[in-house]
Length: 415
Image (tube, rainbow, N blue to C red):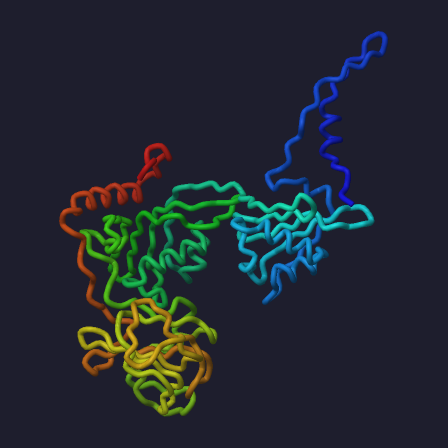
């Protein structure tokens, strides 16, 4: 049985206007309806329970676990058509169930938390219904200055930035900055817009400008400038040089370098001193590995020399890359397959001769081993000269903003 709606009672009480005269006359004013909160009902009037989506759990299984009958669940699924795809429940996401407070404890509402912004509400008693509720989002344009002292992660947080901003920087500079090899004294300064919900950053909407200054003197700017043709790089360095290059700086995005390029390294398993013309990236088993450039699969399979599962790719201009100790390969790859820059080709593992999960990554040009950390691959085509005047003006404005006080929202509106 559904509970009597206290909202109506509250509305009546709030709408009563009394004026007691000498004869004790009470004057009653007009009733005013109290609107429900944004979620669509008053959660405080129900008994609440919170659970998480189990791995492999279906919508029907979830609703059965929460106490809803099979026919009612089927009818509710019909109401979900075009509003919510019940097949896309994510394991681990939070679900809030609301029950009547009387002895029947009927399931009245279920709130599925999709992410930090959106939730989906299911009304589980007649009339059945489903709708989305989004928390209010505020947007702010800001600048952040990060000087590397210990790590990009900790220094970013200390500077008022967010983990989401780090991931954006990694994407923007994936061709020109090796985030595994940052040094103390390196510096990132950036202008960006972020979205916040309840005071917490939920996403970085746009990075407009970033300036990376290495402690050794190297400077790389990143200006967001879209030519609108859909084929050119979105970010450009000073003078209109594309940040996109023939090769990514690294084949994966996480963790650390456990062993560098050397011609005399003591092998951790065999103890033999021999050349290690590779960079080892320590990462958990299953970490995605991506091709650093366009190419074709030269070899794929088991390496009898201790490399375990290995892929070797052939690229333009005599370059080849090798990826070893993989736990498994991406499906569909075979000798001769074409791969694109950034394409998933396998997953980190510890196959072959390895002390733990890591990626053994090697680069060759015309048969000669190169240090992957020192690889300076050719750049893509520069910005079309017809855009340079507009681009240079934008660069100067953004640099002035970065070096000066932040402008008001009104002065930057529409940029």
